[in-house]
Amino acid sequence: MDGGGDALDAERKGRRHKGKHDKPKPWDEDPSIDHWKVEKFDPSWNESGMLDVSSFAILFPQYREKYLQEAWPIIRLALKEHGISCELNLVEGSMAVSTTRKTRDPYIIIKARDLIKLLSRSVPAPQAIKVLNDEMNSDIIKIGSLVRNKERFVRRRERLLGPNLSTLKAIEILTGCYVLVQGNTVAAMGSFKGLKQVRRIVEDCIQNAQHPVYHIKTLLMKRELAKNPALANENWDRFLPKFKKKNVKQRKVKSKQKKPYTPFPPPQQPSKIDLQLESGEYFMSDKRKSDKKWQEKQETQAEKVAEKKRKRDAAFVPPKEPTTGNTKSASKHDVSAMVKSLKEKTSKHKKQDEHQNVKAELYIRSA
Image (cartoon, rainbow, N blue to C red; front, side, top):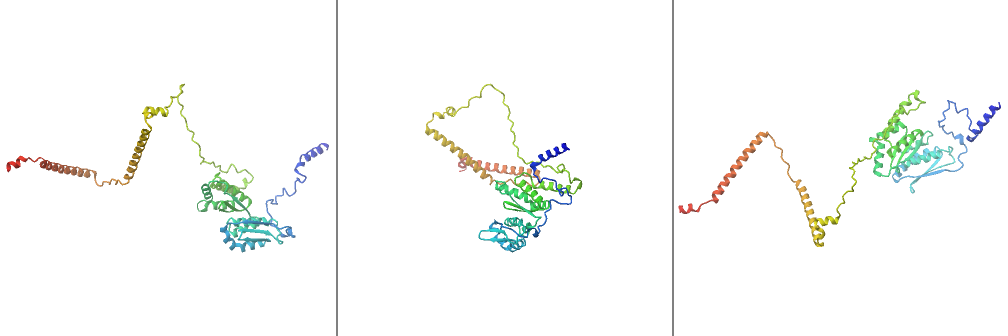
């Protein structure tokens, strides 16, 4: 008995740092209780109301002013049901929510703050009002500071949307969340599990860690695995695909050819003065040197001008017309034309020779 008591005391001393309330409860192992279920708030739990006023204010961009002005009666009515007062200040460009004496739920002011946050990030009012429900949560993911280059940021943000918003719709279906990409933020609404998946997909996409399509494939496989009750308590890593990044630019290693070893140092390169001595420029006067430089400059300019003129004239050279018909008949025609032209040329030369070699004696004799 003493040995058993000593062991129990030692066990208690070892567990003392965990706290005196760290004891097994009878409802911990009860399978009928869902510990993750969020029960709906009952106003009878807090009949006295709030002791102090809590309030939050959020600024909104100017382009949202007209829409908020039109949708504000709907928002005010939704918040009034929960005992929250709201105010739209168009001069300062802000929205404010605060508790009243009719407020019973202490967490509803946090929900109201999330509501005006979503409204400022271009979420439609009917969708944003859903965040007041207990099972609905929201998350604003800031993506503007993740990438410095603006063009690269825009390309990766478009990658998150996909062609005709197909990628965004797939993410919404698989995670069960509402996702809106607006400017430098991504607004998401849904369960805690879905919001965690959305945040991971968005951050990996903007940081170029992994394409959203790979996340979608993984989520599809997880959905199929969840349907099998035999795999409920097993690790799914062996079933999930492992994607490797293939577009990493690798530096090409330049292979240097080893030169044959020689104990002698390389020959000394001629200096500028040595080159001038060889060409005779060293002994020239300053005037002759400047004249020579100017002449070389004129020659290079003339060469460049001639090259540019040749390129400009090349655009005006007519292209060769394609020959039609049989090549044999064309060649025969060319030969006959050449013979005819040669005969005409020889006859002309004969006439010219006769006119040039006129003998005056013939005319004198006849006279």
